[in-house]
Image (cartoon, rainbow, N blue to C red; front, top):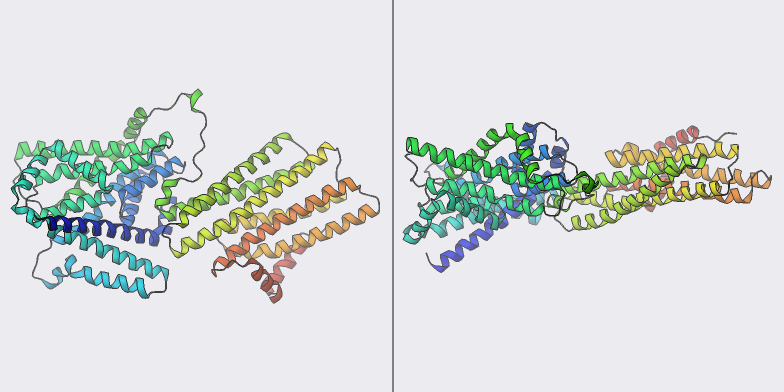
Length: 587
């Protein structure tokens, strides 16, 4: 084997790894929404967890990425440890799909249709389709499909290149002697783990092993321990990603390692023990790519079937290894708001950002309700709750902004890009709503400290406005959560009613002051309350308009509102009149 063969093999490996990266990225972009829905349906049923892990891994073509995501979910408090362990077992099954694709390299037949299944036959066609879609398609979705095709073709081309480059190894006695070393189960296990740990991909290391079978010198005896070691090596990524996480996230990563080590021990004992009894005829026979894929699947499926009933025992084992801290020292650690590990799968990361943004709005709604109560009756506990909410809302805004900017730098589908724009436009409005609730708190504090109260007439009028603003915010939150435009289109006409109410209340307030029924001191506080309520409804309008305009890839709020009011749409007028009647002021 010459230096040029070595360079060719390394080049093939580069194509292989890059193709896997491009294909996996394209698949994830296409399935991002589906992955989110699948993860959302996670239940305590271990079988469903295994199925989920297998499907997600088959889609993104990386068990390492799936387990890293799982560590992120556990660290964020989204997933329990018992659920995580079953998903990890499924991830091991899902990763075997790649090996079956790669086994097509070894197809040999004179039949035309069977020959068309060979990568050397169909890869050029797939590559041509992929590059045409990338260059000429206008739709982002079609371009993503082109990336998948091109990535798959590159992966197969890399596999063919590696296979051709290692063919001369058949004539090298040194290579034969090296493989004999790895027929030792322990050395083979270590070799497989080391190879996968370096490449950070069990699929890639399995592909290399399949390519080496072309030399005809890889036997079943050599391949089995290497395959088992490759499954152990894939745990490295998750173990590294668990550094700095909470104890349950570290337990999830450790559970992945224990699962593969226990499975490897069981399989090694069974394989070599049975061979001692029945003397397998194929033990020293050359293995091909197809049988490597079969062994890889057999190992992972068998281990899952054996260990799935013992999930609780596996959970106890990792809990014994990583013990709970003493109650006095442990404290109460809040889960991370947004876990960096989820950035590996933008669709899921965006879903979490979306949930945290909604949480910001819900905290603002809670603070608004509390501030209304404080205007009537001042209580210190409610003051503290509003201040705590404001601190959390500010923290969420900072972290969400940073997180979304990191997410924007990744390869995203058109739909995910729109969602990022939606969240970025929304977090500032929700943060400002929190600020205005704090201003209402300040008004309530001023009333309390100066021992003054609004008149009964002013209270009755203010209650109508409070009801309108509360409904405006609730409609906005429902529209954001469900992306249901039927809620969003109701916000602007209701916001117009709020503006009308604020103007009318100001006029009535001035009239009371002129008649001497209200002091100037009360008046300033009352006007501040009206101004803040009006501003809250304005920010709700911004969010609703953003949701509506997102459907048209535009965020020109001013232009939208101008066109809406100028057109006098029938639906808008109908809603405006309905809300105006619902929130009519007492005479």
